[in-house]
Length: 329
Ligand SMILES: Cc1cc2nc3c(=O)[nH]c(=O)nc-3n(C[C@H](O)[C@H](O)[C@H](O)COP(=O)(O)OP(=O)(O)OC[C@H]3O[C@@H](n4cnc5c(N)ncnc54)[C@H](O)[C@@H]3O)c2cc1C
Image (tube, rainbow, N blue to C red; front, side, top):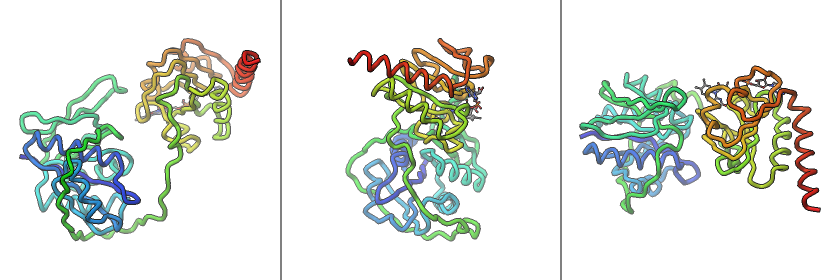
């Protein structure tokens, strides 16, 4: 028998999708291991009614911990205390930045084994086995645990939400004594992530911008070109520019972003690193502009243009617009 503890993040009266996926996956797994899934919820906005809803996704019990929500260390304190008190065999996280931070912190605190970027979990001979893609997603490694507690951190949204029924979870309030260092950070503000409207997975034409654009404002060149291709197009990005804050994460292609397969993938100022390639190599047609004739992206492009994107992209956009307007006349 093995019980699983899951952290559930909430904001403005609702649990986030990723957390509900983790609770659902934890419930499936716990039942295969002959145990139960319990959840831990922090924060003032966590009412008993809200916590009880996690029962609909398979949690039999929810520990409601008064304390700050949305910060990693207080959750580590709470989960470490719950593991010590109830002997959970596994802790499961849905991924995302907070899930990674809490999972890693809990692993360090408990001296527990941890598998990150997990895309699937299963039970085998009474133990949990985690599947983790490796080598640019070209192979899967299977992870099992030697430690008393095993920690699983999923890839963002890897676990599907499954409604188990309408049964409410039992809610228990638990007081946790937070470590001094856990409460030194405080939440100053929360906001919506930019890019809610960026849909790169459904687009037929993707104009992807990289560091070669030089500055955030130059993404306008990509937007103009995407517009010239019509409504089934969208703008995407590399991690380098997402990390630089030039474009929202929702538009990132690659190993730690999205996998896409549009009819046309157009790379503007992208070197073609392996971590980017794994997210777009299934595109039907790959066109790249790069001023470096030896850029790796040309090795897997159907058409390569060696030159300065600042000169070429406006011309391409103008030519497409002229052709479209010519056709409409
Ligand atoms: C664990 C891990 C995960 C990662 N996950 C991802 C991921 O999901 N997605 C991802 O994209 N990356 C990912 N990366 C980062 C990846 O390794 C590369 O650093 C990144 O893809 C490079 O982005 P880039 O091509 O925009 O920038 P660069 O590599 O800096 O390339 C910029 C290119 O622009 C060209 N250029 C410059 N000026 C011009 C101009 N005026 N006209 C035309 N061309 C020009 C240059 O010649 C160069 O080839 C990951 C890395 C690690 C370690």
